[in-house]
Length: 156
Image 1 (tube, rainbow, N blue to C red):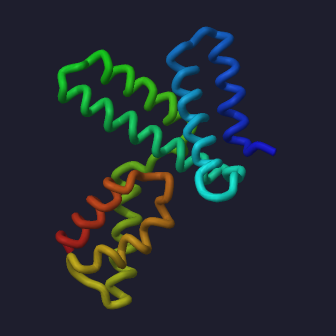
Image 2 (image 1 turned 90 degrees about the vertical axis):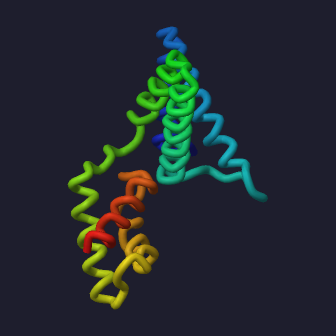
């Protein structure tokens, strides 16, 4: 019994191999390997849920983004472009990311909620993050969320 997202990846891999799309097939193959590694990690092999598969895909996409930045800094534009292209393929499997405005709205509500609970100022970051993280899980990167929370707390 495979999860629907993992099954989708496997079907897309087959289609991309048939279409001789090396970039897409290579990217999906690496992602499926990461999912399999996650499934056999630990003491008992298990099937990942769609949410867990999404986390693996998000982690893979983040690796591509970071690698692209590193290649860009190192003056290897061709490698950076390939990493970005792989990241875009993976982004197609992820839920749409929140815009900055949507993230700010969620963070502002969380800051107000934390203030009501007695947490204020820069030391309230932990309390606010606890409120925000479940609401934005998979919809915004951790670094973006943390930056938005810090900005909201220092401005307020």
